[in-house]
Length: 269
Image (cartoon, rainbow, N blue to C red; front, side, top):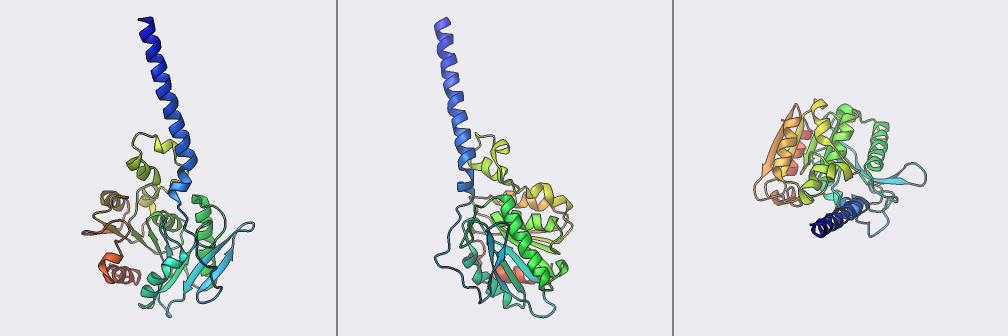
């Protein structure tokens, strides 16, 4: 019996050590998994709608801006974690065709912007871009906050800070720890995740009209998570897209869903 007990202790100790190593690895590598950070193939021109806003130190945030027609709102869009600023030009052009303004904000470490992406760093870039937009004469009442995937957490945080009057979320999540738990149910994600983007906790205090669009075949962020988040907002409309996944939810419908977003941004239900 003593030998069996000793072997059991050794086995349990080994398993505990391996689990601890796994937790340390997950904690250390989490930002490389959460923020793939594609880089821009070219230096962005400082014209044609592109501009560079200084951040702290030597950092800066690139933006892409199309002014609104007189009286129309401006959509401020925060992209997904596998995208970059250059990928937002088509969406901007399609919304601008409705007369809407469009401002897309690059994240630190993405595209041509230096630095490393973190939740606080992305919020700082977003705050700076919105302050710049105010200097252009666009008030929060004429600002519609928009986000896709990881960017939905940025849009929700900016809404919490009073930067907009409406919110549009494409493929949103409740929180990053919740998303991580789907892929790593054996890890204590609520203890390990540093960049939490906890939209579910912020949603009840946001008494703004919210439009949520989610693909029914989304295997990265399940549609049920989008529906669950929608129930947390006091004024949310959740629209699901049959057959759409995570990366093709807007593209799959041609212009239909972007037109839906434009109508909502202009004050529609």
